[in-house]
Image 1: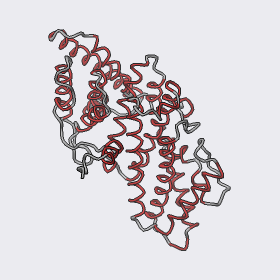
Image 2: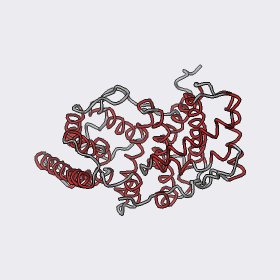
Image 3: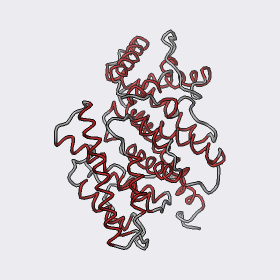
Image 4: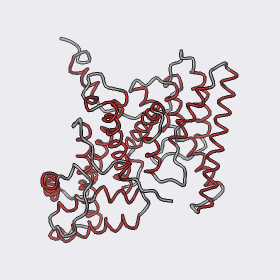
Length: 391
C-alpha cells in the first residue's frame, strides 16, 4: 500500500490546504534565493528593516513586529513569486508608514492639517533617504541601480499617506498606469491582508469584522481587475496565474476568519437564534438578490432580513472614520434584536454577538462567491464606486 503522504488524495490536500502563518523570524536565506544576484540587496533591506522593527512594540498577540513583513514575503514565496523587486517590496511595504507613526508618537503629533502635512513631508524624506542608501549599496556591489527605483516605486505605491483614507490608497494601486508595478503592488497587498487576517486574534472584537471587510474590498477589486485584464477563465485555468493563486489564498484566509468570528459569537449563548439568522439571510439572498450588489437599509422591513441590507454601507462608514454613524447603526441593530428576541432576555453582550454573527455569516458568503463563481464581482463595491474623496 502506498504511503498516505504519496497518494493523489494527499497531494490534492497539499494543493488545496489553507496557508498558515509563520510565528518565527525566518532568515533571509529562507525567503530569497541565495543564488540570485540580488540576494545581497535583499539581505541588506532585510537587515535594515529588521533593525528598525526591533525598536517597535510587540504585536497585540505578543509576536515581534518584524513577523509581519516576514509573513508577507513568506506568502509570496509560497505562491512561487520569485521577482526580486516584489520580494524586496514585501519586506519594505510598511516601512515608511511605520517610520512615520514612530515619528508621530515621538513628537506627539496629532491629526490636525498642519501635523498631517508635516508627517507626509517626513514620509517623502524617508523614501528619499531609503532610495539613496539602497542606490549606494548597489553601486558599491556593482548591481544595476535601476532595481532600486523599481523597489521604491512599489513601496511608495503601497504607502498610505496621512492625508488619505483607505479607499484612496487602494484606488492609487488600481488606477496606477504601470501594469507591472500595479501587479507587484497587488501581490504584496494580498499577502499583507492575508497575514493580517490570519492574526485575527490580534484585533479587538469590534475590529475583527472590520478587518475582514477590508479584505473583501481588496478581493472584490482584485477580482474585477483580473477579469478585465485576463478574462473570467483565469480563475479556472489548471495552472493558475500568480495573482489568482494569491487571490484564492487570501480569500480562504478571510473565510476562515469569518468562521472564527462566528464561532466566538456563538459561544456567547446565542444558539437559539442561529437557524433564524441563517434562514433570514437566505431569504435576503434569494428575494432581494442581496449578494449581487450593495444594498441599502430598509427601516420599514420588520423581518430579520432587513439587517442584511446595508452591511457594506455600514462598514464603509468605518473606512471613512465616520464612527458615530457606524455606532448608531450597530445600536439600531441591537435594539431590533432586543425587541425581536424579547423572549430570550439577551444581555447587551449577547445582542452584539448576534449582530457580529449575522454580519460575519453574510460577508462570508460574499467570499465564497468571489472564490467559486468565475464572473462574480459585488457590484457597487469597486474602488471607483465606494471611494469618496475626503480631505
